[in-house]
Image (cartoon, rainbow, N blue to C red; front, side, top):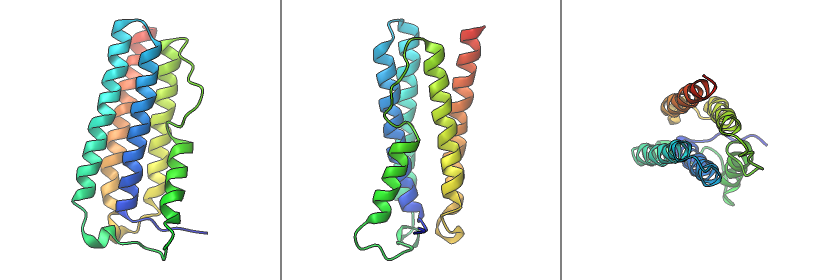
Length: 158
């Protein structure tokens, strides 16, 4: 079965991904004892909170057409499908190796890259006339996370 997703559904998914990211970073922060490292992880969690707010605001700005369903879906299966994708692909619950900050940063970079790939893939599922261009903002935000995490990893190895 193929689904076309509208921008509203994609922003709902983005919000869930950001909540998953918050949990990821807060869990990692609880596991480290170094205050500087803990502060960095909590800062990243806070960035996820900020991004969730951005995506909520962007969602609120959608037109009714962008919010309209693109397929007949009386049982809300597309929303369940999207949630399953988000919860199993990006920042999903898994055994987080917190034995070193390097491993935490590498896992975070991997998750952020997965988010970018996910958004690029889902972008093709959102018709152009239903807000496809709005996804570019999400992708740029996630790319910013990768740059920040990569800088931190380089400094850690430095």
